[in-house]
Image (tube, rainbow, N blue to C red; front, side, top):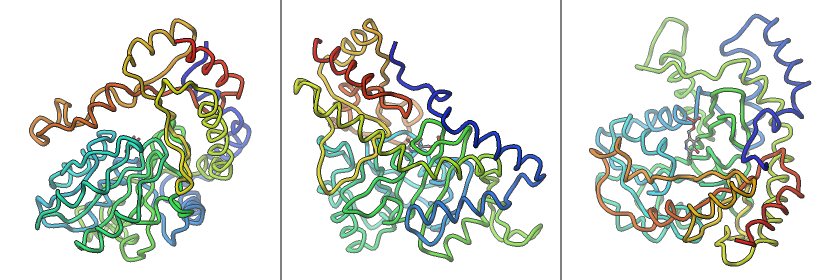
Length: 359
Ligand SMILES: *Cc1c(COP(=O)(O)O)cnc(C)c1O
């Protein structure tokens, strides 16, 4: 059986260092907002290439705090891709704003820059781009639109730690929101997240917001949140961060094997020199996706679907999202995610290719 993911196996190269770090952090006796968090923030900012990083409790919270910190007028319209994980859209609704969906480019699965302008109104205040599956969005035209209409830019980087557009890492173009959910390329052993920015004033506001809106203990400036990255997770993230490039390169190597060995009857992710992809997910598309998934399982290969139901068809979104998004629907009906974990070997991927090509 070739598993889709196995976090025990994927994390096992780090176990020895993890145990050492945990022992130190536990014995240290300081568990919230201490040296591990501030050191991780410095190291992650330096990795991404921003001056600031603020650790928070999850990827969803990173998005919510980032939107909240912008102080947009209530019911502002925020542009967001129709093809994303539900968290991106929930963050907009949770902050009292209106998500305006824009269809993806069917080749990249990311927001189609050519379809953004037609959705902009006088109430539009921000764009949230999502670098889905570990591929950066096409940032030049998006940055041009943000400048032209004076829109704030938030990046959902939850699937794209280390991904680049024209040699610039995601999380440096706008306000970068990261998740360290255990399955992500930089995964903790629990929930965790972070926000990156070059704006020191904004970063300080975010530091207050994550901690009850307080700059000074027991004095509260904002109606804040309890959304702190904790010391234990930060101590683990510091260890894994040192090997993030190794993890990304491993996944890129496995993706290359799929790319070179899979038959053209499957639609594969596009590869283009402007984009440095980190393959949080390696997806293919096929009109008989469900049959293909069953066939693979019968032949000992586990797969996943990211995602089976698009945001605009979710029950939770009934009151918030209307209209048809055929490109997004098409992706959700045909996409299949193949094994591409840190523990997979090149021969595992060749086996998957061989089985797939016989379908
Ligand atoms: C995982 C993910 C999130 C949410 O992250 P959590 O840490 O689970 O809150 C947000 N957006 C995208 C695109 C994600 O993949």
